[in-house]
Length: 106
Figure (cartoon, rainbow, N blue to C red):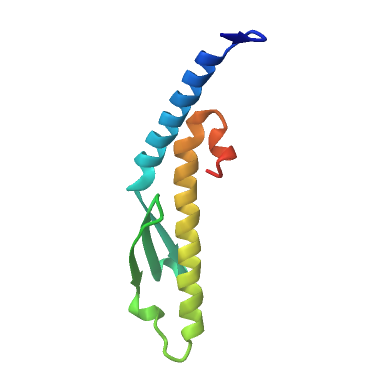
């Protein structure tokens, strides 16, 4: 069936193939790990590309009972770095889908 020169069956096949590629790309990065750091490595957070947080490591030198706010800031910075790196990993995986990754927030 054609509509103005477009084969709707072919269009549906292409959409299904694109969906399959998207799912494969998401699965490929879901378990890959990224590490966010702050304070020159004083705080490290490891998460997967699917944003499953696996570990938090804090160097004992970063722990100052008189300056808890600094440690909180370092943890937050490391968390933001981890999320940014996971986002980059997902964008790279979706990059081969001809801009579809950008449309889907990847």
